Length: 509
Image 1 (cartoon, rainbow, N blue to C red):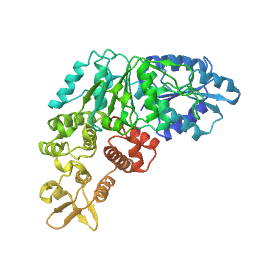
Image 2 (tube, helix red, strand yellow):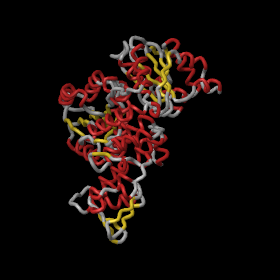
Image 3 (tube, rainbow, N blue to C red):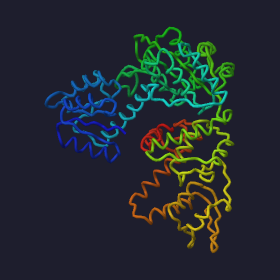
Image 4 (spheres, rainbow, N blue to C red):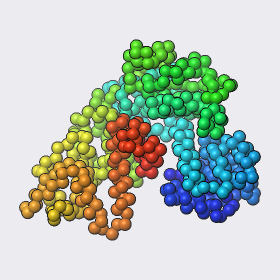
């Protein structure tokens, strides 16, 4: 995670903010003057901060001067200006210069941390909005249905025509959109994606078209919408079939003449954007039901690409599995695990309702939870439906486990296997039958094994693995829809976003 940069010549302010942010597991880096900050920004570029918090009055240069230079070079970087109450005029200037917010001194520490966390979330949204196609993974597939998709992308490579991508959730529609952008005349422009189903109706208009300062409660600065961010590039509108009917009319206007108005704005904004839309729904039926405008449907449906579900390209499962295991290992900083042909056979027979995204999540789960370097059928997650019999349990586990009362005493390797399999095992060691009927017993066994060592981070380790598994399972069930996953888990949208970041699950969620 990129650090929060704190700029203030007052050591006490730096110290207080550093300690408060570190308690929230937000890394920091401090500076005493603006020249050091500018030098660091120039030399580190993309490795710089995710949020900049600066005092307004410092020797050697003001925070407002720093704000101007930062916004010129890094327009998406949120900047919070700290100011004394007597500097409210300067605070107005800070807003006009594009500051995310101002923080009056003396400040309430919890409120300051919450403000910085909101700026972090804004920073993540901007990173997603400005993501370039060169950062995207390559598409993989040798199945005939995927080769048809690749040929279509090749034929469209020199075109700016609007494309409609259809396919089930998790089948990789965004990857196709990125490939269309990468191989188009707009490849050097931005690729901006937005899931219209994941954003509440009352916020979607602002996300698409931006808003002026004061347009509504909480609109404290002018904000560019996705259409402006995608100027000279490509805008990917995912799940277009779920767009509210009144916003469909505004979208049609933009597609017709390339002009729109920000929320609360009075001046037309012109944009030059190629639109690629995607949906898992039957739009023709949505039109018949009166839920989707027929004229917008025809405007979007110039070229249609159908992306096959994973169950129609089963021959690609082994290649995709090995690719995702390599990818997950690189993200976790561990050696990539191998998968046996028997385990691949089980995966090949699975229906994958969540498609490629579900396979990717399973591979990440295996990278974390599988006990050995070679993945066997018994290591696969419960949804695959592998039936593990006592006769299939390796001899080494028989010798590793015994029972005293209700507590299974196992070595760490054996307890890892118990947690990973998550299924009932009946093991006989010649004296005692060991029964692990559910995941709770496996967890107890694994905890017992860890607590028997000299480790001092057992709580953090098991909590992290539990939360990762729980969130990945929820995202699999909801096909990657974070808001719905958070609702099912009974947590807030901000909480699941923060947990995904803390647990390193961004690329899998």
